[in-house]
Length: 187
Image (cartoon, rainbow, N blue to C red; front, side, top):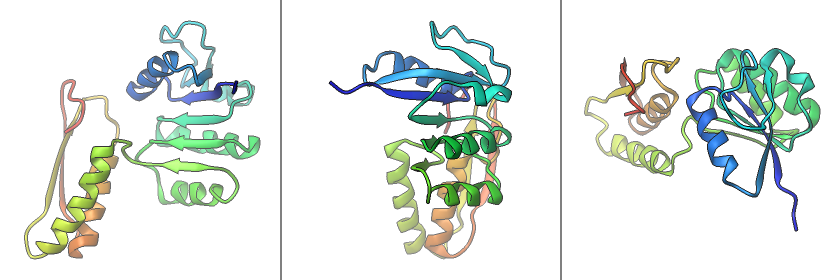
């Protein structure tokens, strides 16, 4: 029998971090060995040890880090994964070009997977948007997206990904409009 994959969840107090903690608890193939938040405060995750982001060096051994944090916390988790030679899965958006370059370079040393959105539907939508933009190259293109008031980046990473698909398809950037209101999951 194979041992469960040891997971570190970085950004554990955010919406995705909380969802990952709930899902991992029901997955026998995963064992969350650490949850990292800005201040190390627990959000009721049972026996999962919580660590402050400043204490990353103290986290126990893990096989993969799953990062849904903020751009200002990204460099530290990438450096930890590189130093421990473990994989990184990240959905953190709003990364700078230097952070994206560092992630690309890390990919030559460790497994790295980044996406602005991990939904299969968004991946299909990205392809469809690229195709439509190519066929309708003379049409205007606007991206209007809305998220909950706690969403930090605007436009969102998903909107920027779809915008890049528009630009690749028609050769021109779209216009963006971002709304942050209430408890909208993401539209």
